Image (cartoon, rainbow, N blue to C red; front, side, top):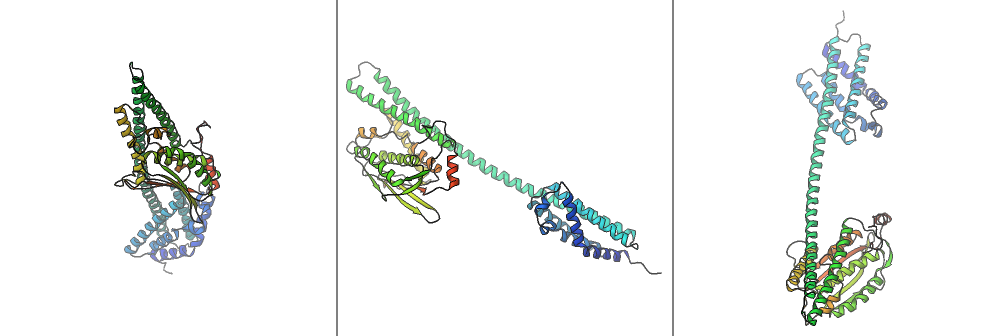
Length: 459
């Protein structure tokens, strides 16, 4: 009577049979997954991506069946777990959710179980304990594989959640900082409003008093008139700034000649500068065809020039323009340079400091004016250099809001804003505009909601 192979020999034969039928097993698994109506992600990936680490898992399973020593079995089991975990990682990266991955493991378990049963039916000499050993090992394989995949999913979800928490905390910190900065800006604007309103109240009280000399009456009336104009302009600028912050401004992008527009603007502003004993120069090519919103570009240069005239006591202001950029990104630059006092450069960036100092200066002027009972619209220049009447004839600058409006308008026009300054050496603002806007950018600008008041939309 022929001696039957031992259990270990039959397990090794079963292991070899499984290895030989690997492709058929994987093909049956893919068919089962394709027929499952609840599994859709597999149809979007290639066969190589689908089988992923499963061949390595099956290699470890087969080594586990064929192993004679406990050490070999332990090593095979460890490899099996590692590859199952990697499979879970790749399924995550491929866009699977956890239930899909678990259902795939279920289909693989069933395919391997059918393979064991088919092998047993073909080999009548197979010992009963060999089949039960293989089935237990298979159950352990799929159970551990599913657990390893689920564990990897949990780790990845925790890492992703922690990353989202970090991003949210950083975003929240930025929002809080922005809210504090905006609250401070509005507080400063409210301070300016109170200063102007107090001067108006004081002037009104003086005009209502009995026995005021005619000369004093005229002087106070002038103060009242300029204070009302300053208050009105501040309110207009605050409304413009609020509308820009709320994204309720739209651009009207069209072709225009920047050089012609800037020369015309400088010609219109030159008498106002001359009244203050300042020059206003315009330098640049005769023609500079560009695309953009000419109204908003004019508002930018108007704010910068008015601010420059008001802070400059000697010399004057120069407006210049030129082409810049390269073949890939064509741009043009606008420069507004003054010979005024400049800004200190000790701490924050020059532009941030300029925006803050513009408001702080107006506050200090308002406080002094309030104490003296006169207009807070601007600091008094030395009488030997600039006429008080000429400076008060200039349109009010909005008490420090003008530079903030410039910054917002630059953001709206996709323009860069830079500042070169030194205390006592004047200030140069440089605005860099695109020469042309892409169609998508033009559409985005035109799609911005308006404020509902077409007459107020252009700044």
